[in-house]
Length: 205
Image (cartoon, rainbow, N blue to C red; front, side, top):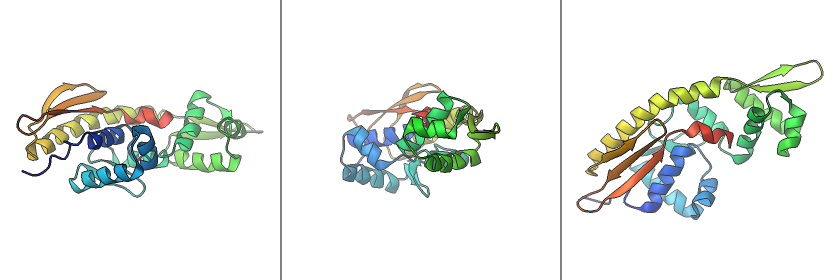
């Protein structure tokens, strides 16, 4: 019957990480999971080959987990430094670019460049008050999070179907808007895949 794709516990952890941090840095994943970068890459390649993950221009994420528009946002937020800048805006709406740059320890030019990306995605807006260019969060991130809840339901449905097609005999133990718990396995060998389904919260970490 072949190897169970999710039978390896490290592979499950990598998949779980990419549900919370889609398009995230694999180096950050390795550090967070206390695994070597080579080990993370090995499991990512195995999951890609088995069609549980897919790749975009600048990231890897579970198949069917993201809207196309959100892929661009998560690609932009793949580094911890970028997320720190965005989190600073949400923590201090109306802050000037220079204030934000000082707060996160980056140059004003770097911060302005990052905000150009997020502004194009509609996540932040820049407003001039005469002397300063101030940055405000928009409602777009909350709106994206609401859309993701419906998407997450479709994702877990398709994941269960995919596991069933691989003869993993999946059984949903719990499913909420925030997470899903799936027991699976071949024969007497069973394991549990616990997935967090709210990736937008990580954008502001």
